[in-house]
Length: 486
Image 1: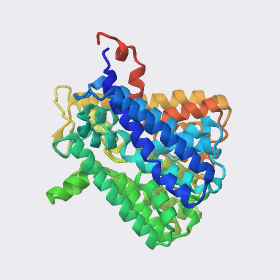
Image 2 (image 1 turned 120 degrees about the vertical axis):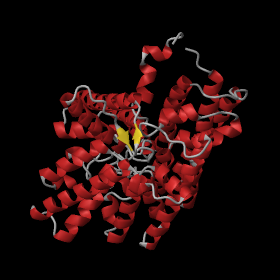
Image 3 (image 1 turned 90 degrees about the vertical axis):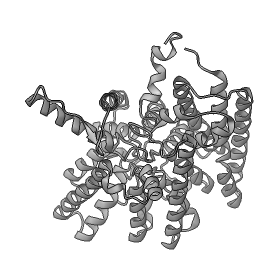
């Protein structure tokens, strides 16, 4: 296999520079709050990442070409690993999270927009580090590489294969002629959502710091908060409604927003994935609200309030919680568990298997039934009046199988920690699906601090694997990837 060293150096160096410069706002927050240890940690980390990035870009300065497919897989994987490592440095250097396994876990959880934490007292963390851990959600939400791809043309590089390696769904639609223009267009929507939600949260009585932290967690569908009790800390229906709206928006395919705005046509009402996504939220919210009410857990108004918020949070894999759903009836918890497997839409900031894949699998099952009854019939799988290619269907089925296989194998490995089955199982599900809280010890009021260092490292890798759609990370460990003649 012929990997381009210059291509690898140039793109990885750009990612290093992006990560280093993205710490500047957190450094500013540290200066505002006079957090000396954090200031030193950020300054050192920024110097390390920017100097390393500059050196790598200098090595690859003569490369001006398209990234090959294999280059894309390797570059994307290593860039996310580097992000997890670099993002952990401020936590470890400041002494806020002295154990590097814990710091790496927290950083991977941030960049992968998972929202799991090892912190037992979130509010004890310096303000700048609280800001940084939430800002990693915002960076990782749309993707480190997607941002870099927007800059690649100025460096003479085409980033289509890098984008395809990181695509959050079966396909990455190009809404403009050039991949870099697509990245810029999606980032425009991303920034617009960020600004609007921040303003709305400020109007709800949040401070600017809290509004930014929770906006980063919502728009990136990550879920880190600045309070130990999360969104429940504010006790505001208005704030919960704002967050519900933006969780749902950011779990939606971003291409629909761009196309609907540009072409003045409502793509939402004709998009099969979005209709299924909205239908799931509506039906599951109603079922859980009824179950909570008739079980006597909440009154009617609170049943609707908590059902809608937590359903929206789980399906979009944001991970915010307004109550401890560990205490809910078994029926409601089973519905939430189902949503953990579903996830958001393709080309959104959400994780999980993705609604579009669930839709394809259901149509695949229906076709299987039809061909059993009529063996000679030709039954195509169509979505949005378009026939889905057979290789896309095959990849979707493979992805679902690998997704489930990784969950079960990882649960077996995690069980060496001797925690209960539900804790182990949902800890793995929430990491692979980038969801956040699970059930029992890793529920909304719990955390992941009790796991061993090895288990935390495995869970960190699962977060990154889930964020990169599984294939991207695991493909580099196959012999074919490294074979010189393949």
